[in-house]
Length: 299
Length: 277
Image (cartoon, rainbow over all chains, first blue to last red; front, side, top):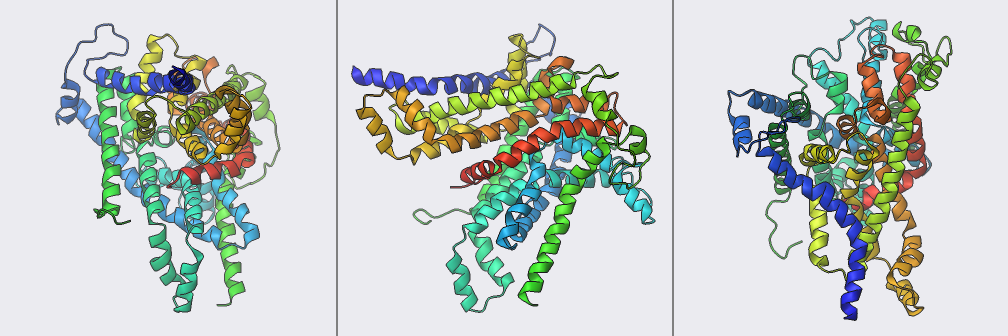
């Protein structure tokens, strides 16, 4: 009896979070599934059940929905492919650079490279919109001063992608750097000492000791950067408006448009669910590629 | 190459990169003190030729501007503070109970919570919108606060801390006749303060900086947050008023950079502790 009472009071500790978890995570998950099986107009009261029609329409090459989804997906993929390698490699490069600084300067440079991460995407996008302005932007002002033609950064290709990727790097690379700095600091010092005795160069140490030691963290950074890049929205929404043409109209923009401009919540939810599944599958593939079939018992 | 020369070259490289990281922010602040006319004229003046406060006066004091910028700022700060307090408190209770107390089904609950960290949020944002819409709560503070409280990140972070927390303190308090709630409030929370700050700063930054959700979930000028409000101004009446836009982005940026600089250590601790263990 006492025991039951005790476990009841213990459950009360979990209850507040559990209520939030159910109300704002589990129920939305199920509700989203429900919405995707209906012709769910944002404002209408008649929302008939349509089974898998919304999903079928996405995969029917002739439908508007299909072109909205797959063009958005393709543009998102492009951004992922352009941004993730740079986010990982430059992030690691900055971490190595910060670690090579004299101890007194490390904290300073780490803070400076990390500051932009604390700022909202809308502020980031507007600052870069201004830096990249064709007629009065700082970057084109420098270009024309040096005798070059100004570049229409946000309205022509490939500059629109370059601009979006540059703004994103500036914004988020500090986060990856912090994770790498921590990983680098945890590589056992005696590994380096042993290889110094063997006469290994700095590059050899990096390839044979550093990289293998930070491998799990590398995977973590690759997966989180990929997920973050999939979720891109604010930068193209504010910087290019999805242009030139529809070439930077990413998938999340397509979903928002379908939901709030076309007011078709059913098909927008189906798009969101497929997008989420693709993101989960990509994460699993990345995980499998970097952890090829570990044998049981081995660590 | 001599060691010292090499170090100096690396410091030089790091400094050049540091300039690249600071320059956009410096240019933002500098532009915010230029007239729109001086800004749009282009040029390379890193400091304003004519230093002016007109952009701040115009955007903050409502001179000729009928959008409530101070209200946006209040909304962002209010949602950020209330939301992060709520998150820290309910996550700490749940994480402590799961780590230490006899919670029924706790072997199922913890993995259930943590597994949701893998779920991309895109999947919940449209149904969340409909839930708030059905409840008539769109465009209220509820949308700016509650959706963030479901995230399992904090439970995960604090659970790891409480797992390694020494039992002796709790046992001593228990022998003194304290009940679970008293032990939690008087013994556990005070020792967990640093990690709770970490979670609090994280949560505040997430809520304060969020963009897409508050953009769709609020609609009236009074309920906008600062990050969504400035985006709407950029697309509306400030489309090429860069002096005024940069005043707005500066106003939005200063508080978060201050909080970031104060909480940086905690933030880094949180990032590295949830990295991979």
